[in-house]
Image (tube, rainbow over all chains, first blue to last red; front, side, top):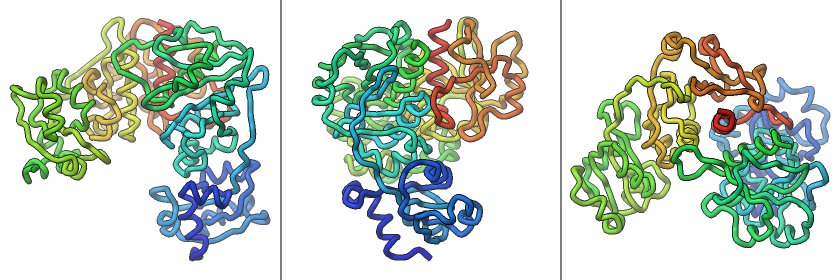
Length: 248
Length: 248
């Protein structure tokens, strides 16, 4: 039986304001929670069905977080997943620490990505392509939104996000390639990517903003062979990273 | 004021059984409906706000489909979009006609794609890369599901789908490359694609089924540089088509 306090806390953590006030967020479902348990995130509480606890006693017992029991019905009702028959973890958020591209490293820059599903997908793709850091504009949707965490399929444990004023951030970058996608850019199939730099992905409707465009020194484009008007930003990120990795 | 009959009909067409019984489906929202108006689909009725009608009189007037008026509230209530302040079209489905890859052409094959968002995304990507035909297993989600149509962003007007028993279909293919993604396949960055063939994409959880795998004669894989366990099938389709197009 899930306690009222924890139930209320989980409901609150679905809202950004309460995540920020409490410095905590939710990780839901067996797969994501298991990845979490092997990461360096600090867990406050795991709410689990007795069945999930039994099946995972080895990694759940004798840890320094609290365990609460709940039924699958309770988990589904209180959490953000449509159905959840295993667990929800309440986890400490990390500090918003400055990151930049070190030599031999590419970093993603997200200029106003609004859809949580897109952000989660981009984090997962970054993880696939070995990108460890993502710089987000302050208008980018919250990294710790349950829909973002869920869409990363566990990759949130391996990729760091840093929210900042992009204009200010990018104005401090010198002698580094800053790639961005524009209709008029160089065909990405013909770009020779260097060993490090920044790859900017723009807003779902408006692309890269004018104030960020000013810092892009390598305009690239994904060649189109048919007639679709555009590609989703997650798809575009994947194609650019695939080309970047093959060409470095 | 939307008539009760049309309102009921629109509600029914959100369900596969009634789409099949009536040979009709829904196209919702301004952008998709405008692409539809320039396509060869046969429209039964367009339900429109007076405002959308006025702004598009040139393409809406004097056509051989019916016009019904509705408020934005009515459109949002009766349709599948969260909000819709423009229009819904009721459209005749096309016949499930046999398609195959002609010389110089690549065709996608979908083995049990279950998620409507994924199918819609794949249709949009196919359109971007100039793929005009998609063969679907009979277990693949319905092409005419409103969520599929909406996710194609208008590309459903330019890409044809054909549902069939894949085992039977593929057993009739000889002397043609059939590509499929497997962990053990050749790195897609190093594959020399021919001029034509089939590219099989597998189910979201289980990949390509054993009975379809038997027909794959070119196993390929998307190289991983980081640690994410997998890529979404829409993302994987985009990366494979991007590699295919650059290498042909």
